[in-house]
Length: 527
Ligand code: NAD
Image 1 (tube, helix red, strand yellow):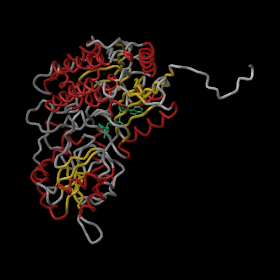
Image 2 (cartoon, rainbow, N blue to C red):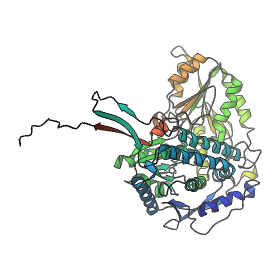
Image 3 (cartoon, helix red, strand yellow):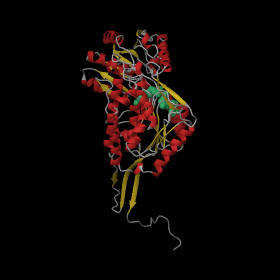
Image 4 (tube, rainbow, N blue to C red):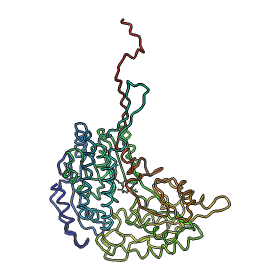
């Protein structure tokens, strides 16, 4: 835990806001890789400096794994799986460990939230909420660890028992993004452990601090050495060798579409099981018969929460033509009042983008949309406030008069950018048909929402949307008991719910003949 302490020390310096950070740069190598129960430096000696996106302040220096370290981590996980005892530990004991972890997380909520906010720039209160969600995720998988313990199949022969049992898949590579670092990690680590797997975790190179905390905490609550291993570093150096390693049985990845395709192709070489949680370009549909006050307020949260860096962000507003002006004028007025600031600024309502490179990408999407004829109603630039200059801030942006052909509508900008499209019925299409056609006109299928006071209409539209989560008269909430995942190019497989545990289980059929006898198929000619 020594290495973990050093990172945590950095957060404990933060009491009054980002300006109060006293970065404590450590000796070269941080011992922040965790392999076979031991903190280690990188074998290459390489390190990475983590900076807070709100002001560029140094947060920590962490080890950057080489392919040698990745191989060592996979071998440790392989050994821990093949030799045990974790895969054969009784389920109640595995569940008890998850509960101890949840309790520990609850007790350390503020420390963990500070680490998350320093890495991501996200508001501290949002990180606290994330930690509460993560506690619930660990408890959910502890609760369902023994769910569906298998079944007996009737063979019609009383001498033969036939049963279906579940076993862990094996060594899991868990690869996560930067936007909800520990939350996305918990959706993988909790079910992987509940099912008895061992794993190598590779968080985003931008936001490793809470993964370091989690790995240390798992050891402290009694997880055997080798079950949880941590490698840090970028996709090419630490992620790719993990996916390619023949000793890995399953890859669970959350991140962008392009990376997901690369991972799927690489995993094919040894036919690994692959679970992908990819991006989304999520339609938020407002019909004229909606409760407009609720719909408009939620439309802001849908897209501008965490500056739009949310996979399920409602970045595509689809509004019925007759209410377009009222809805968009109000949204513009509200969006221009949103306060930007660092994670510990009590006045801030949303934070920065995660990096300079990411802000460049968002700016390019907006520039493309304007070149394609979109109407910039607000934002579209960095804030004037000089106190924000050192961070990667970008103003909440609304682009009207958009169409599905625009790159900014078809692809994820993953920033605070709302594109507005309108729909209306005509002689060939009902209003509902027009809304559904527009909402489904995307390669993605992660999430969407429909707003209307007509319950029949909302049910009909929800049933026709090709998206993995549909909110009716709401946006963003989720519960650990409900499956999460995408249709189409938003991914495959499901996290959370009951299926989130299934991802990490193999199914085995055991046939037991209690009265063995010759099969008698081939004649025994020796007699
Ligand atoms: P990313 O694809 O750039 O990186 C994700 C992770 O993959 C990182 O840890 C990265 O280092 C690693 N990686 C990169 N190249 C790799 C390779 N060749 N092999 C193995 N690993 C590699 O994504 P990001 O920018 O970190 O995250 C943003 C994306 O994540 C968005 O597209 C967002 O929609 C998506 N996301 C989806 C969900 C969901 O539930 N569907 C949730 C959160 C984020």
